[in-house]
Length: 408
Image (cartoon, rainbow, N blue to C red; front, side):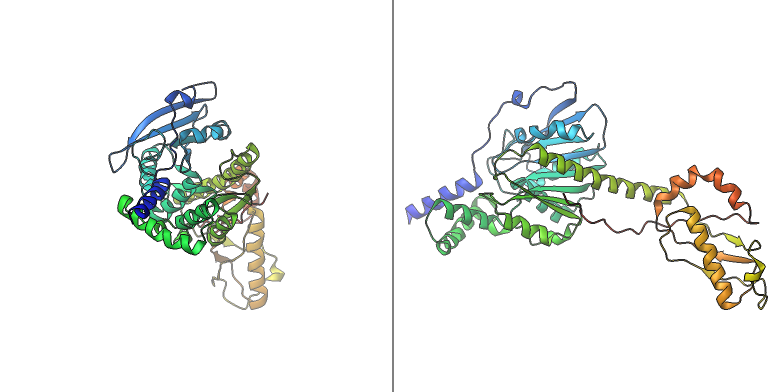
């Protein structure tokens, strides 16, 4: 029994204390060069442990920050490959060592159980300077991103980049053990329960508690999944299952690299292209909300004296008013005006209603015409002055849906 317990303890040590990346501060490279400035600082989490943080800023100021989350045996050095590519797109880039990794405090890796609170500490700090945040995780880091969003649902986080996320920690432990030994899986599953209990005693969580699939449907923000058919640690089936259950805008990319291989620049370019599209869409929606907040929605009267008398009837009193609200997406100011007039003519012809003024409430679903309206205001003024009362088109908040994901 003593030997059995020693074996369980050794397995637990390999899980919660994997090989730790060791490095010196100068390994991070120069503090400043022609393209960026790096600021190194410490943050303290809720357990009073220091978190080592590096913030890279380019020559162009940005209010969008990409936070890189390293793998189980990784550290800040893992993110250096992406610095230039990200800064060239005018984003801030932040990377840090989770507690228990790199040169931060702590001596245990918990695969998201405690790391989500390290991430919350970092986001709380950087949200003072950034209006939007992207989480980019690799292996354990992608699991931390999913678990964090499931628990906190932070509105500052706008997108996720998930490189090789797994579903459940217990499945990974059993899979790795089966590859290194010839023990049948049903025996390994029994042993994993003992391992899980021991980890519970040492760290406060079980292997089954680290599960990304349970509450993944609560996450609605766009996500970019990365997987590989030759991944020797996290099978592509696990990532695909997470992808299929994800509810937000999503895209999956297959790379030809193993789990711990360095990602090529072609993959980074695809991720950055996708992020630029998603973040631009988010920025437009925020801008539209601000515009409509400052512009009330008036209701104006349209005079129909300019209509052809042959299209009007004198059956009813001229003071009668009809309220018509077209429910059709209108993409152009002149098209919108013509649609209103056509709707009115149809009403007069079909119902034989004679009137001088009509009360119109226009529902505009395309909010991108504000700039066009301002540019063409002078040109359109003469067109509107043909009517006794000027026409003003009211705006209501945009009701668009999220666009479908892009394919490469």
